[in-house]
Length: 399
Image (cartoon, rainbow, N blue to C red; front, top):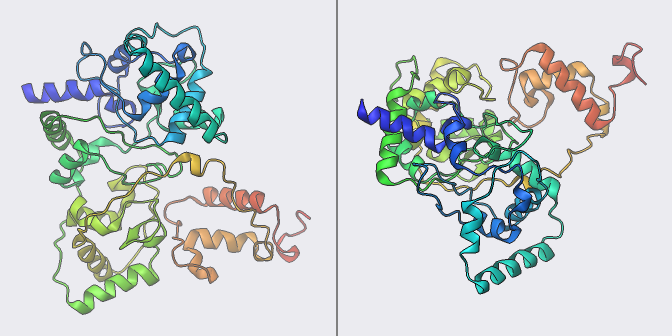
């Protein structure tokens, strides 16, 4: 019981529940130790810019609470600093220890920080305050730092499902997080798992508690089958050339980056969890956008057995929201879109682009989306392309 209590306290002081469901969701503990950002404009910007590069634990009187490292690049640090300069609300508390930490630096050190910040502003003149606001929301800064008029959001996976993961992988991950979904758990959100620089004991407490408290079970009995060279080649060809897996996932350096890399999925998930993801993805990962692809049982067993053998070490980095927040979707006003009726677009979303003679990597979302949701997507596609379907399909509607 003492270990569980210590782990629960650690989770609360780190603020895990402000980004994840499935654990204590109270933000009061971590916010009590983190400075309010409502009036962050009074902080020295060069100090913020420097601090974000390598956050140091300044306070020792707030338990395990600490500022984690988000692996920010220079442009991201600059954008956040510019945004924080604009915050001048009346509800913020005194910056206290943070300002004292900067004041303790020598005059030469402060001048060096000023020069570094000024140089970054000159070099990255395209970085805007608006971009900083987007990053502030993406990283859920308000989860730990009270900020006037803003509320935190759940941006990560439900931690009650950790039981589907391999225990050794979880232990390594909490100690040294890596990018699993480079664009965020909710694709395009830009959220990322920061590094709290946990000690070995903290990592062990956290891992043991999350695994013991997990309510996740696969609900299936599956054992991998032995694969011949022919069977392995068949599975690989199915994944690469027939199924939509590589539209979102990578395998051997090929494919998308929306979902986790499959090159090491066998080291992250057990065989039963892999099988369960292929048969009921939303039950395994609540909120997942992964659609269910109906397949014959022998094919599911083949793919699951093949993926369970994939354990190649990979490294990936998070995609910076600064690289895609300002990119507008392609205006798809091509003859191809305008020649296809709404029903055809509906079918492509429902059954996959393959039926339209397009890439097999566009998955079928028919079992993931309701008919009404699919119709709304079709309508949005029409807004993007600024076009309508052919006259014969519009039944007198539109022009």
